[in-house]
Amino acid sequence: MSDVFFTDMRTRARGIPVTEKLKRLMKAAGFDKIDLKGKYVAIKMHFGELGNIAFLRPNFARAVAEVVKEYGGRPYLRDCNTLYVGSRHNGLDHLDVAQLNGFNYISAGCHVVIGDGIRGTDEVLVPVKGGEVVKTAHVGKGIYDADVIVSLAHFKGHEGAGFGGAIKNLGMGSASIAGKKDQHSSGQPQVKQCCVGCKLCATQCAYDAIRFVDNLAQIDHSRCVGCGSCVGTCPHKVIEYVNGNAEEILNKKMAEYTKAVVDGKTVFNINVIMDVSPNCDCHGENDTPIIPDVGMLCSFDPVAIDVASAELCNKQKPNHLGWLADDHHHHDHFDAVHPNTNWRVQTDHGEKIGLGSTKYNLIELDLR
Image 1 (tube, rainbow, N blue to C red):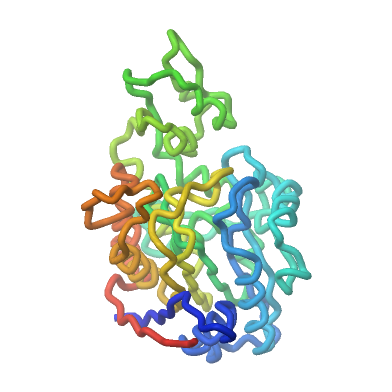
Image 2 (tube, helix red, strand yellow; image 1 turned 90 degrees about the vertical axis):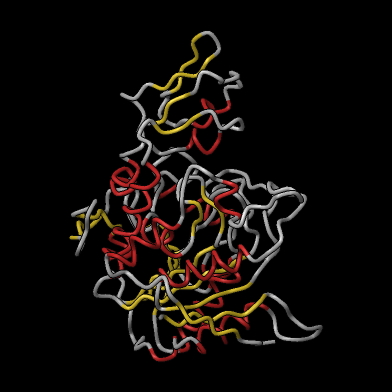
């Protein structure tokens, strides 16, 4: 069983702020035992798509960077470019978005680096030890070159993976554009005949792969890269993958990419469960959180921290103003929001390939 340390988001009047609680949680979880002196420390996080405001504030990044510096490390924030052509598809636009969303040296206390360069091609090919669906991972050089990695993940829903936590942050988020395409390559979306022709999917397709015939959407698979933007965007849920196990393969590939990223490195994981939007921060918008804010978790095990985070979320009552109504009786909020995928695949497969353990010891701390 892996240790997972947890504290809630509560603070007392005139007490310490949440960011100070995070610092104390990191140290309680053993971060102070890592040899950081003179080491390059990549803080892997999501800078948020332009228009999205659910991503983690720069204040959290600064808190982590300050702890890294306290122990002699040299921190930098990093993320890799996106497969879809949005506001973070290349290194220059990505840096612009980071600045607009508040991430800079002054606010975060360290430099911002795009991990796979200007065009998303600055990568290292890394063998996946024990990989079943991926033999070689395309990892952004900016994270491969780090001595130590800190995964600072916003825990939220995800239309392809069920949720996005440490595994998605490290596996998908550390991949170059070629790596992201590799992970999505099993997905070939198709449109059901009950399409209402709202055309919202076409506005989100960066590869001009969607046409309309008799007001019904059709997908040109010669253009489609399988990114899943249309699947997640369709308000009527009439777009699905031709390959019935596409989401399962995606989750397995994410776990194996994470294995490639962490092997041979010291990796410390932080999940912040707040503003739990139903979809990923890659969306240029965010819906009302599906549950109340829960807390922050730290662990050296990316599998254990994700399972613990999901189970803490599932203990919460749904937000009656959000996606899940008051009469929601599902035992799993993420399954209810995205019934076509199963988040357990990423954690179970991660355990199978030696990434971590699905069994954990939750250590709850009152750090107020």
